[in-house]
Length: 381
Image (cartoon, rainbow, N blue to C red; front, side, top):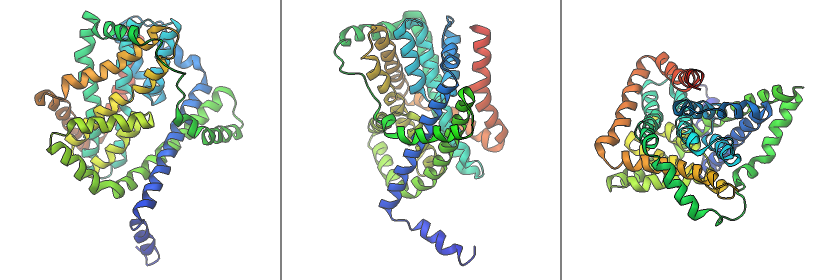
């Protein structure tokens, strides 16, 4: 390092806490702008592209794969579940058909945090820890689906419970839900759209350009969130979460994940912040796991609020199925240590393999989130 570089490096390390916190807030805001730009770009590509993926599905496994693939496409379970709620509300998709789609959306949304883990790929130990923290979400959702999908197909317990709850709640909701986050980022998302227009592209091509710009914003924001979160909250988060867990604080960690995720309306943001902290060794896998479960439950809030304002009770029913699925999955898996260890051990085993054969890590993402769902949709639809 040259003498001119040293002061700059020192200044970066010495950024005051409040200034670094403000920087992180700005970066999270940029991340939200990127996510909304991505969604807007996909809408420009044509609503029929996404809608046609969900329609005309009758096989439950095909519905599961459609939910995975559709959510990977939009990088947001909130977006795909909102579409499913809309399709149910319009009568295009029945509740029974939509239940596996909702479960698939839960699996598909985990791809974001798994991709974030690749930011640590050059440091083997960091990559191993980050990949385990990311994929524990995958394995939890897979285990939850393995337990609850057969039960639902055999008994319809989630659907019937949700239907009973919706019958008690329909008509008690207020005005339609308007996301404050989307309103907050509307202006810069418009700027991204204007930038896409400057390329001269129109229609679906403009949508592709906006999707690409959104991805650049997302990835850039995540890189700098990773660096600054590590320096900003490392010691405090480690002490707080470890203290909670030492006192049996798993429930509190779940509540923290719920609150954060409902506030930003994205479980991907919550888990994408946790993964780099785990990679840096700030958080252990048992510390990350309950917060991830809370994020799983918290992400159902937007669809619930939107569905309660819909005219058809089926819309609220399917939104409640989403909440019940995530809540029941947590209650079945987390309280029993032997069961809780299953997704954690699977994630640790996959991370050990990934760090020694990085091509296997890439293959896992491609096969699990794209190839298998796509083939499943084609064969079973």
